[in-house]
Amino acid sequence: MCWSLPQKSWKTSRCSISSSARASAGNCGHSKPQETPFYGQREFQYDPEQDTYTCPHGAILRLEKRCYTERTKEYRADAATCNACPLKAHCTNSERGRSLRRSFDEEYLERVRAYHTTEPYQKAMRKRSVWVEPLFAEGKD
Image (cartoon, rainbow, N blue to C red; front, top):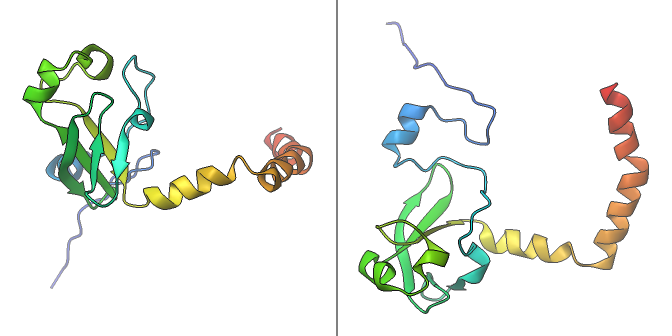
């Protein structure tokens, strides 16, 4: 018996699944953060007990779906609420309501981001700029 395996599609982005697999998984592929005139995720308050976000105007964004291949959750506000909101122009241009994505590992990522403001981290980065970065520049040549 001969086994035939489907070809893998390797991409340079963080996501290595094929476009057809991404489409069947609900289009949960990674995308680069974009500079937009809209409120960022930091303007929304996360409630870990309810697993919801609250927008700057007070509307609730509920969990809509989980994307296990990308390890993210997608939250969405009710479309009717967003369309009637006076802050919609600052929040979204979608007729379906504002949506946010949250990594399964977000609490750990937040903890690591908090390290960036500490003095030991700043000291380590200063050392890196003196010892490591010049070696990378030399290796590039």
